[in-house]
Image 1: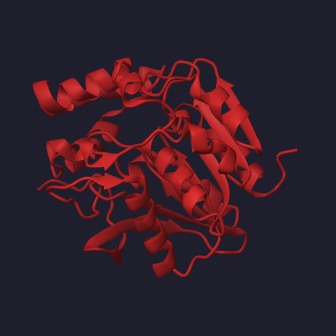
Image 2: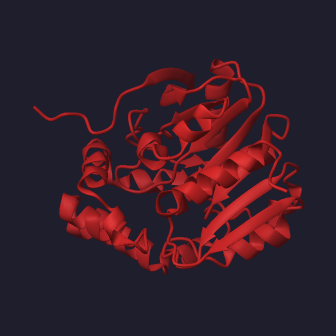
Length: 278
């Protein structure tokens, strides 16, 4: 019997036949924080943020960690495409179902693009943004030239999903390859086996660079200088484009800042949501 590597949490209907799976921890003493994960084979909210959300929950926040449509245990459409607006509306539907009317949103990669869309579409809802190498700041052709994206496409459409091929992709996520453990590969592999190979193309990530100036809430952004999936030039775009932003470019760091530097990420995020960043 295979033991589920990713624990199962709770479910909520968010409209249009989509059910979102999520984990939660903590209380509303200090506020609510929503975590929005990135894309890729086998991605899930818990796998992305298991080293982060418990820390914020321990410091008085209700942390909500869903699986985006097509990932984890959430509904996986077999066909059709969805815009960032569509997916942001699903996250809004989840928060509505949970009775949340103000939230700080943490998003990395594709999840960062979704978080930006939420801030643009629902400014009355999104109190603060924490972004980690968000997508949606370049034209599609730029991303397709990135080494990590090329490797992911090869695995999906040429080599096929296996634990070995997935490890090749995930070692490109980090500068310290030793952090890609057998446990992480197992988590991702089990979820990947439930996904359609075209899942990554289901969500169309538009370039939102020209709309950054419209973001009304404070923004804290982390970016690894050695990112092989989203070009680190995006850090400058966030810093100069968002009216109220603080951006950190981190040396010797890849695409997963929250995995390579969890203490830095956790503590600065806590200070930011506490209005204590200085």
